[in-house]
Amino acid sequence: MSSYRTNAFVADGDFGEATREHPAMAFGEEVRRLTAASVAIPTDSQATKLFDSRDHRTIMEWITEELGVVQPDGTHSKGNAQENFNNAKQVYDKLLTDHRHVPVSTVVVETKDGYKVMTHAMMCGNLLAVSALNPTKVSAADGSKWDLTVPVFGELDLVKDANAKHHGLLVRQVKFVIDQNEILKGVQARGLSIPSFLQK
View 1: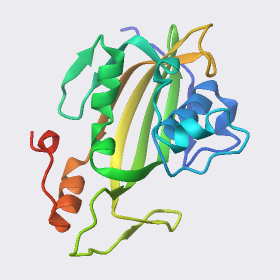
View 2: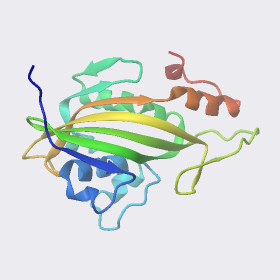
View 3: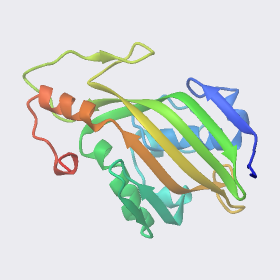
């Protein structure tokens, strides 16, 4: 019986100097900034305004034209990159004023044409609506206060591209699982209506 072996880059905790030595991890850190409005960004970052404002007009610099997205419910879409990206982030745009992904652990393995990045993170977020119920905030690992802290598991398929603007990589496919029950509990605790995409 044959087996396939490859080296793996394993990281525990948040991004830092050590993780930035690996191109896939450096790319992943910038992708996190791309999708978050509350992450502290170095002033020399070329994309500071883009990340801070959740302005995704340059998203095609980061993803392939045929981006595939596997949703938490198993739904798989591929082909319309912009639409697939929008669907993948609707839980953020439709529910949260700001959020941050804090990596817990990450494993990167090299593939024939890029990297596979598998990560476990905590998604910290604040809900769009303010409720008169005023439920207690929860604390993230760094002590910051949020409406929600939710476990997220993700897998990125990165492909090398000599013309790519960011570390020579593009996202070809995204798979993610998020604990929607925790989100539902947060929404219900504030007496808010449950959005249709969480009612599946």
